[in-house]
Picture 1 (cartoon, rainbow, N blue to C red):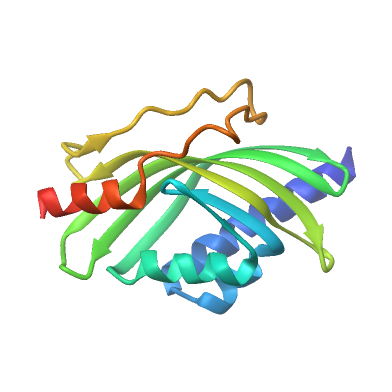
Picture 2 (picture 1 turned 135 degrees about the vertical axis):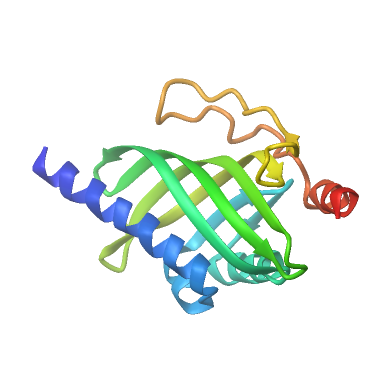
Length: 173
């Protein structure tokens, strides 16, 4: 049990490091959060491998001036050298056009120990809101999840796609 508590604390620190890398737009620190063979499923695509994930992240960050990525609740289940998690996230964004945006969603995670520390092995991003801070923006449904932290939707088509999000952002300027 104490080993599980230590693992949970280390995974929560991983979320803190991820948040810090986002805010500072630090590619090096963001890269370090991922397992070498990690997979990020987001915006209708599966991106595999640490370097490819960083390249995709770089494209997403280019129109953001500041972003505060805030994991607000985490459910983590440790299974030896692997773990599962569900993380609810709110992001406060100031885009390069100066406009504020709120992003909300859910991460379904798999973690593993690599090189002596916990890293993201797989993340499935479920975008649930994108728009102005007055919450007049666009909402998407959460995918069927099952009891936490188990996620049964790994093979569910990931929506919306990056193109759909870009079209929506263009529509509200």
